[in-house]
Length: 95
Image (cartoon, rainbow, N blue to C red; front, side, top):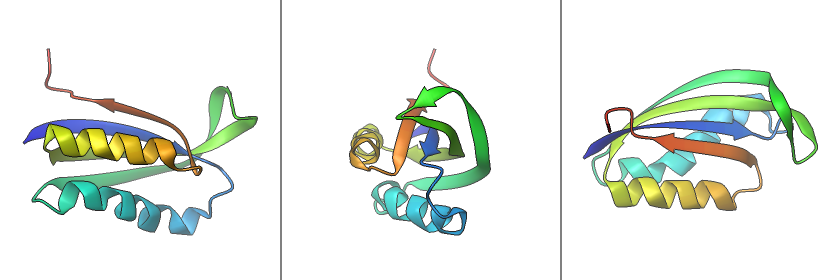
């Protein structure tokens, strides 16, 4: 298992009350085989530049421990979702 950090920017039209449940649904990929994930929702913030004609987005940071193939699958599934504007997955302990 490896440590990862995932930054997700969601479409601002997504209901902010449903953000946690949406993220939990995505994170089932990580947690189903013994991985762990902690979510920190930052809320709606202004973007540095427009993405898909949106000037705001709902930011969330996920700190997780999982297998590399599960992290890759999560990134793929997030890329397919229309509610996700942008993602960035990193391994903070990799040098």
